[in-house]
Length: 122
Length: 107
Image (cartoon, rainbow over all chains, first blue to last red):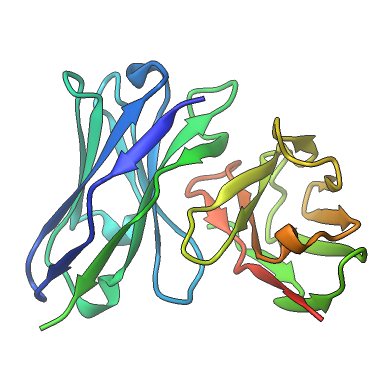
């Protein structure tokens, strides 16, 4: 089935960077893409991008293109999402999720990590 | 981007009721339409994928249907555990997009 375990909540100042980790277990790490989705307080779900853990290839949502970087470490089965130049409206819960399905991307997201709350405040 | 519009945004229902949530795509999205349930403080949970396939372990009272631009999620015989927010998602066209959510509350 698989499990994704994310890093703990963080508080950051505007202009800083944050790096969230997502450790994968229970299935082949390089077998399926990992997506990042965020959810601002009381709001809906916003897809940010994906990473192919096998090749390291990435695709980002246009609005995050110049501020986000998704990477992976195959030795620890962990993917990372770094967001730079943080603003107050980046305050949100950030989720990683496995892409499951018959094609490489994009099918459906299951399972999800537990989420990491990033608070941006001066 | 394909815009996903859910309706209603919220609804009140009683245990045992049958409820239907609809999701309309701004462009045809084939069958890559998924439904998730989210409870407060928890990550979304996949219920239905490819428009109508029930995820293993999800109760059979959940069902999905639809094609092209119009999809629906039906809960037949609402249980207390089903009060949550439901999201549709299309993954047919990049970027993947979600509906705004439908909150199902207890009447």
